Amino acid sequence: MVEKTYKCLNPVGNQAIVDLKPLAPRLDTLDGKTVVVCINAGGDQDITIPLLKVLPERYPNVNWEIKRKFGFSAELTEEEKKTADAMIAGVIW
Image (cartoon, rainbow, N blue to C red; front, side):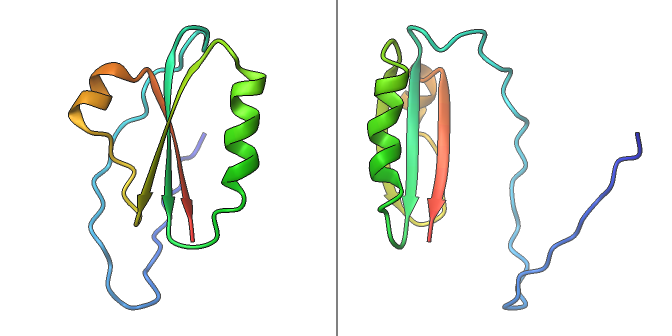
């Protein structure tokens, strides 16, 4: 398999430096796990309302923690990194 490299430029003309981080290993189950849902909002947040309602309904054995921020950073605090098993990050603009 040939690996392709894509380069995308910021339309403003400034290319922001991005820290690359490896993906975490997949969890074998979500039951009993703590999942942080990090919503980075800057615009209309209507889509998160049904999402945040349906996740606990479909996965009742998961401890869901909701974190709302403004901007594009999906960083967890050091304490959250220690206690969370997984994170779902979404950017709404």
